[in-house]
Image 1 (cartoon, rainbow, N blue to C red):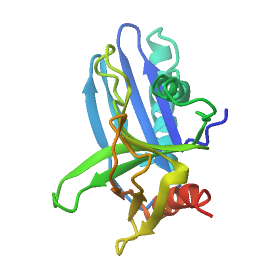
Image 2: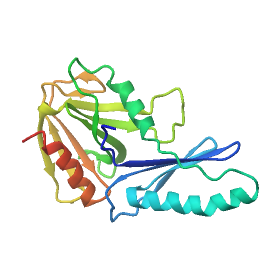
Image 3: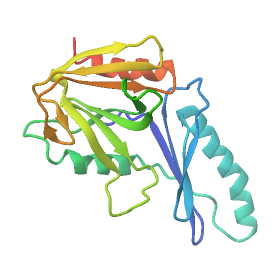
Image 4: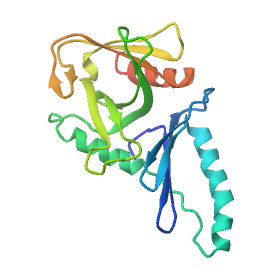
Length: 217
């Protein structure tokens, strides 16, 4: 795969119901943030810590598989769902201009913040390709099969990034976009924009900044 995604996803299926865990994050972190999203037949967990995700999935498999075999059911199946993310991104990248590469170079979960809306934090997904950066809203639980998994909130060509700036809090950064080719909800917007983003850990912030700054050099 051309994706260097830091996500780890798993699906556990039972006879007539399923439990899906969307286990996503970057390097081993120091945070303890976990959320769950109820969905038909199960729920989705977001740990935002790849190491912790793997430990949870392996523990679940170890604990449940033996009990399932004893009652005549198959062992718990663990499935990687990266292909679903890539397929969802392929849908939103179909409209890219000619010559733009849609291969995912970096995928991370972040939080978006606003200077004028203190205390308001929204979970987002940042996707970086060789040519563009996308800020997306992601439906990790796929609650509605008729709606796309990824919705673009904002996007820009990497050559139109002005600056990637670290903030006083090591888990926060600001991405500055110039006015020439910034797109908001896929409509051309001629104004300078800022993405104020937060991550789960300092390492996650450094990873995202490194992935972007290579295109500013």
